[in-house]
Amino acid sequence: MNISQEKIDNLNAVVKININPEDYQPRVEKAIKEHAKKAKIPGFRPGMVPSSHIKRMYGKSILVDEINNMLSDTLNKYLEDEKLEVLGQPLPKRGDEREYNWDFADNFEFNYEVGLAPEFGIDFSSKDKLTQYVIKADEATLAERIKNIRRGYGKMTNPDVSADGDVLYGELVQLSPDGSVFEDGISNTASVRLDQVKDETVKASLIGLKKGDEVTLDIQKAFDKDAAKVAGLLKIDEETAADLKSDFRLTVKNVNRLEEGDLNQEFFDKLFGEGVVTTEEEFRAKITEEIETMMQQDAERKLQGDIYQYGLGKVSFELPDEFLKRWLQATNEKLTPEELAGGYNDFAQNLKWTLIENKIIKDNELEIKYEDVFQLAKARLGQQFTMYGQPIDEEQLGQYAVQYLQNKENANKIFEDVKALRVFDYIKSVVTLEPKEISYTDFTSEFGNKN
Image (cartoon, rainbow, N blue to C red):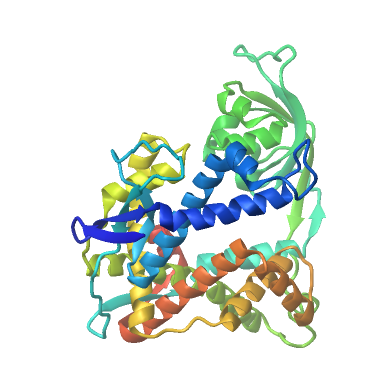
């Protein structure tokens, strides 16, 4: 057997494998004998089928299997021995189809195209400067959070007249263009939350209503054509909701108001424990701390996004694009040319960042230990249990984490997440981070959900 490499350029190569009869015949003969021992063929006792009979019946398929096994083993070993960093997987060379007799005497030649990872250098230092946002809870954000908490511990009342923030419980009936009830149209009894009404003119028409009042409601205008919200309110599917043009008559059956809980000691004790908070100032300080702790996650995501973009801009290298596109199509049969063209740039950017990550880890000898993977898996699972209101002790959580990581796909995902965090932490430790305070309102206005 002979294997060689022809380098086309710095990013592409062709690996040639020659397999002669003396290379594959011993393996094929052994496979035929193994098959003969297990074969159950009428007219022969189990394990007594002659090898010649098996070769005559199944010889070619066994030969094909063994050649494929040899190719896989040989190619993988060659790439490992030569320390070739390949992207994707080798692909049969285009236009290299050959006809063989498959008569146990062929000399086989197989050629594989290989995409090679580029060579590049990258060096982060204190000369690299990035903004680290410190998000502060502004008065509007703090007031909204306090309002929601007080409502969560408040009580429901039924005022005579509706005001902003109330909930109107009533019957919604579809109307014809002339204002009459639409025959066999949509009707549903539901709760209309005024705080979810987007249009101020519509909201104003819903304020000052009392039990028994009727009002015509442009439901699409009210909820800014939010099909999901309209569908939920009318108990119809989203497609129907999106196409709906009719106005609706709302007949008020009740006005509901969630009164905010009083800022007293009983309220503070329910939230934080007995005696932990005793004044409104301490309460506001606690809520501010809670908000800003949550905001740190937004700031961290922003910083990671900035590091990602900065790193990609800091180093310039090419990829074997044509090979990678062919590989993506070969491994994703349902991928259309349009989808490939539209998504390739994002794929290439992510691949470049992965190569940058790998180089940083290698050059700086960063270790990723099982304990790191285990702890992140525990943290992720713990967040899920907390979200669903299911308390769990540390021992149980550890057992769940072990089970979770036994799944190879889960383990690989957590490993990649740990790797990404380790690289981000390293970069943050060597670059210059320039703190910049910004209010939460300004942060969301400027950056939104882009990071």
